[in-house]
Length: 269
Image (cartoon, rainbow, N blue to C red; front, top):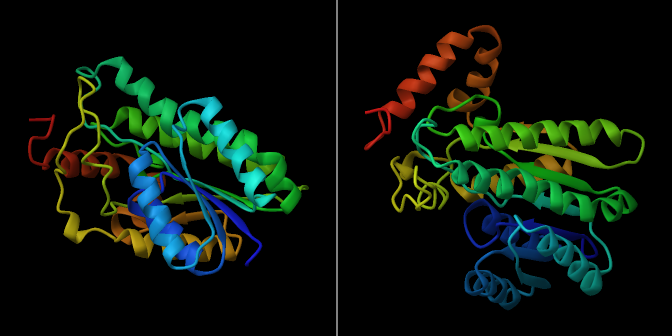
């Protein structure tokens, strides 16, 4: 493990930060990435104190050139890439009829194109190392969530992209893992975009009842280790909902509507 190199995007908080700590303390070398320079440097410094070899970079995955430079800097420092975790993402909460279309574009640029850009530039090196591409989507990448049209669209797109990439590389040794956490306690709901593109600023859900980022990180680590192709987390709102969507789609539609509508200040009110 001491020679293995992991790139983690969106690593300044939530699942990404937990993954960085977990991989670092297991002996992996890290490139951690965030749009926020001060936050990612703080995470990098915390890890260095613990003896982790880490490269902390400011990058916006929505920008192709930032993704190219991220891979270039990783190779310059470590000489290889073994795992790419496409974790950076943003969410939204607004009815499609009310939302500014720029909000949808921003979600697609970060969630979908960010995954495409990072994977494109890292791919030759991951194939060389017979490494793993990880895409962190959401249950919203399996079930369309009302009030999250752009978010669901971007996550469905990532799942389709990575599923196709897996098939293309059946003979190269590349592994592809698509991870769909359920509701996880993180910053994503606070930074979610509302109809006019502003950040929501406060979570509409009880974060204390959600799966912790550390628990999600441990499950992802194990899934990568054992070459899993798909990981759906939580039972009722995750595995069961995805299963029922195949057999009782109308029931799942109504349940998704009720679940989103009961949030405080729901756009359905």
